[in-house]
Image (cartoon, rainbow, N blue to C red; front, side, top):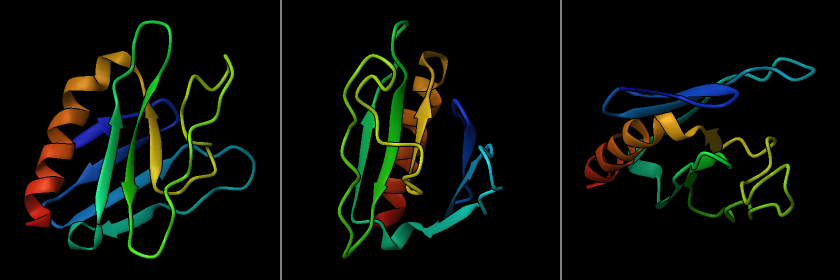
Length: 106
């Protein structure tokens, strides 16, 4: 199951979540998260004016807050390794991915 984001993709194979971002500057390594380790998920649907986001919360870490302003539109910063901005057309796929992760969490 894959979700096409604004600058990357999120993949879920039933056990592992992989967030691969398109590099800006130095090439970031894909982030792999085991679904059982996720303590929470945050999902904000994208609209025609603003992108939404998918974010995974892990134990012992604070979820990155939403940045304000027109350029960010209430999304976590690009540097947050556990989130990805999504366009409006990816809302359905992202909702299905979140549901699958929540189900895998148990």
